[in-house]
Amino acid sequence: MAGMKNLARFLALALLAVTLPACDTGPLLRDRYMGQKFIEPELLPERPRRDKNGNPIMAAKPSG
Image 1 (cartoon, helix red, strand yellow):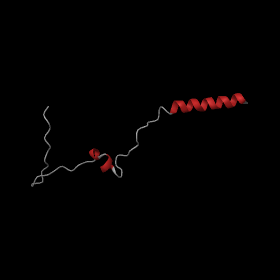
Image 2 (cartoon, one colour; image 1 turned 90 degrees about the horizontal axis):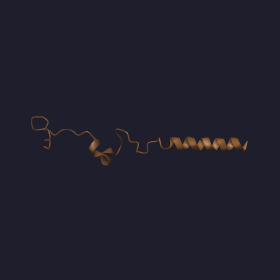
Image 3 (cartoon, rainbow, N blue to C red; image 1 turned 135 degrees about the vertical axis):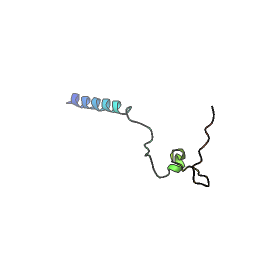
């Protein structure tokens, strides 16, 4: 009986030891969420600036 309890504890610990490293520890963030403009403003889509005719003004690419 004590051997079965020890075996069950060992298997539970082994299963826990195998599954914990496989878990992703990064933050789980959705594509769009409340407060994203404060936390990750670079990920939000931006409307392009337009000239007086309504044509988009393209940003100049840095040469290099």
